[in-house]
Amino acid sequence: MRIGIDAHHINGKPQGSRTYLLELIKALSRLSPLSSDELVVYSFRPEETAACLKAKHLEHRRVFPGSARIRLPFVVPALALRDRLSVLHSQYVAPPFSFVPDVVTIHDILFETHPALFEGAFSERSVALIRRAARRAAIVLTVSEFSRRALVARYQLPPEKVIVTPNGVDREAFRPMGTEPPGIRERYRLDGPFVLAVGRIEPRKNLLRLIRAFSRARERLSGGIRLVIAGQEDFRSREVFQEAARQAEGSVTFLGAVPDPDLPALYNLAEALTYPSLAEGFGIPVLEAMACGTPVLASPRGALPEVGGDAVLWVEPEDEEALASGIERILTDSELRGRLRAAGPSRAARFDWNETAKGTLEAYRRASS
Image 1: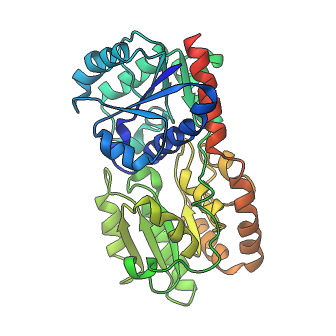
Image 2: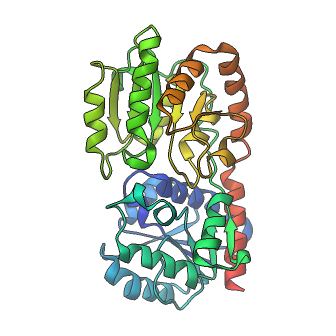
Image 3: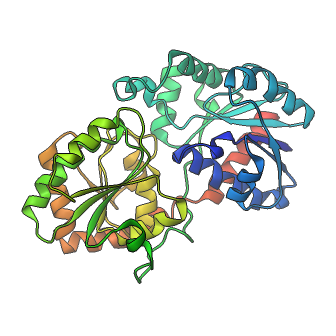
């Protein structure tokens, strides 16, 4: 097969869909010599994409323009025809017509099921395009059973058309380090202990309540612990910064978007990861933190229980006192911390990018047959 992958998200902002593309393509490239498949990767800046992937057995092509109004209906189908593709793999939005079978990955449809959390983030047109892509595609891939159920129910898709290929974790990068990684504390000015939150700064991540709950917990603890938030500003982020400014000076620190190579060190340095999201189609930071042996506190919303299982301390995310008590407990209960540190890497080992790639290859074969 000649497999085309629309990877323009790799040239975009750090988020789960970008991580998915990077790791999936790298895993597919490892499998392609064995399967005799050819991989054609389309992106806005092929040289930059190739440098990010550092993978062999790939053909890189430039896709253009940035505007999807021209790129999707005209350029992408023409490229698929020119490059003699057997199947085209897109994320969320696929071309309105194609000369080859389409596979589309839709990580979640929380913008449909939880619209209040996405007010101002998704236009009616973009939602309509995602719906059309799901209904027209030969196969829809998603990353959790939670998202699969939502897709089948909301878009009235045949259940056999929607396949779960969960996200994985690079366990060579995300692992317990044993000794403190050099240079990271100095680079990010992280003197002293801290609790970490990772993710874009937007309403779904529940950072307003987290900041207030952390402030309560901090008052009951000693040692000047900080809340460190690593993530890019997104829509409706201003109120999060305003809330942080109302707390004790120096108690909340924003790192902005952190380069991928620095994340394993941050997880290892953190006393715990807090992830009280209001809705998730997967939750990659929970998986990454578990792989590092970092204790995790999270909300049992969406797909997060599928990811964390019994290796996470679950806390109701809309109850600030419950959140505060959970933070206090995960920092002070040595027996709990020991159990979570031991359980995390074992749980994370269930999520492997090579298995994700194998499932994706099988989906390509089904779509093209």
